[in-house]
Length: 187
Image 1 (cartoon, rainbow, N blue to C red):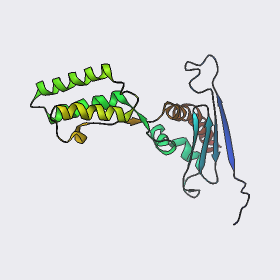
Image 2 (image 1 turned 90 degrees about the horizontal axis):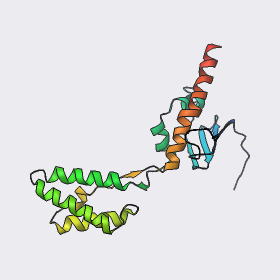
Image 3 (image 1 turned 120 degrees about the vertical axis):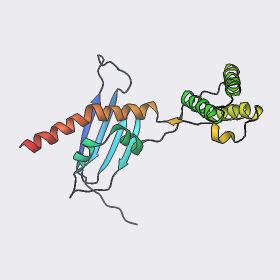
Image 4 (image 1 turned 90 degrees about the vertical axis):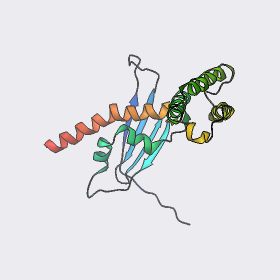
């Protein structure tokens, strides 16, 4: 077994919301730590903890430059998983699929959509993916729909915290990094 101390080249940026901010309370604080030698990003915040490491490419692009250009969605893909069930989007896509598969029978489609609405009144399937899927499968199966797995859509999204931290990174930290790179290029 072996252990050694590594002294990374890190930069830390601290974000704090102020009372006058339009979305005050959505993320009160965040610490962004960039290890510019090892190409890792660590974020600790009241929106959650996130980290990701890229393969170091110092000969072609330094880490600050890489972080200044990553897109918000790309960063989300790296630091978080789509693990939050989105009931409304799932229901919308399921109905769209239903209309596609049964476009020649609009009365049947409307009948099934009505049954989905009635089921919503009695069952809370909005927070639980399993309850949603089972309810949709029951409705479609009762109506004689084969291959319900082709029709039932399940949409998962990033958590609110992950979306917020990526937005802060994009809107607050990246402009700072871009300005720094522009300033260095002028020198």
